[in-house]
Image (cartoon, rainbow, N blue to C red; front, side, top):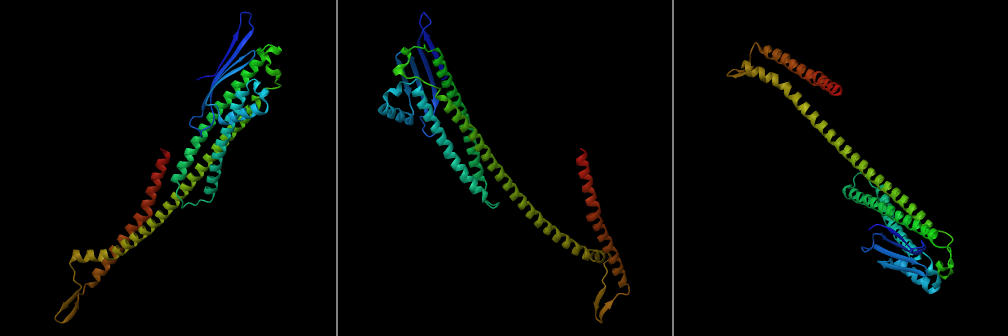
Length: 309
């Protein structure tokens, strides 16, 4: 439902009735926090039709009736009390969420990288959405106050300057909604600040999570390096014995012959040693070239090619 202002005049263009109707919301705590007000200002008084009028505003109105009954005839008093009660409820909502945010900030300040971040991040994302929705509601409420302020100014301008329209002799010196508009603007700006602080907490948890992932990756890389060193050592030991085994298997040379007369050594035993040493040196040379010359150069060439692409 939109805001409506109606001006009724007679055939002589004299003001007969000023009519106003609008709908507004006062906070999130009460599920029935949507209210409706319909006001008709005539020459001898005002008639109000209200649905879900705020409890706080109703209590203030009853207190005024008991203390100073003539003050309730002031124009837009019912609307002002409703707006003031709504603003107070919005301030309570902001205060409760601000308290939760401060507690979370204190908790996250002492948090280490070993803590879990999933639940905290989800809670902060939910709070950020609430701050966004709360600010949008405050912007709408600020627009509602602007509508009421304009309606008040409009009634003051079009109301005849006669005592007949001044009920109970009450004269208003200023617009009562100016203060509420200022307070609503302050609440809206602070809501934006609290949302930014919530986003800062989310970024902090994100950075802590990245640091923990980086630490885990570093530990994995260190363990992988140890495993790689062990495999290299094992391969080197294997290469020491592999050439001699290969020569013995290919040449079928039995250097030590256990016969009837004892151990007999072949006169060509040096052939095995020479071929084994030569082949071992050749194998280690090829492995060294592969490990420390060809592989680093190939990796560097691939990096240069990726950069050029």
